[in-house]
Amino acid sequence: MPWKPRRPRRGHYIPILIPILDAFDMLGIGITKGYELVNARQIDTVLIGRRRYATRVSLERLATPDDRQAAD
Image 1 (cartoon, helix red, strand yellow):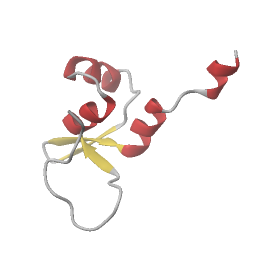
Image 2 (cartoon, rainbow, N blue to C red; image 1 turned 120 degrees about the vertical axis):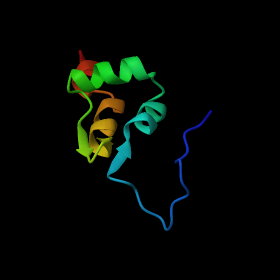
Image 3 (cartoon, rainbow, N blue to C red; image 1 turned 30 degrees about the vertical axis):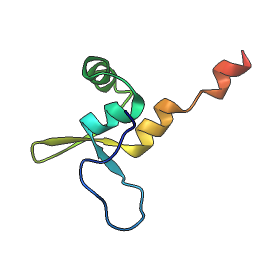
């Protein structure tokens, strides 16, 4: 099932922070693997109140292939 936000968004913008479970869905990984990546600091998170959010930049960095490894 493709990822879609839990609530409809107004306007056209790219969110900076994404709810952590939505971030795992976007990456196509499960909760256990997702929290392993969070604990390994491969996904940067922010705590606002009691809710945890992943940064869009860290998700893009994780999903983008590393050019240095491709060259080897």
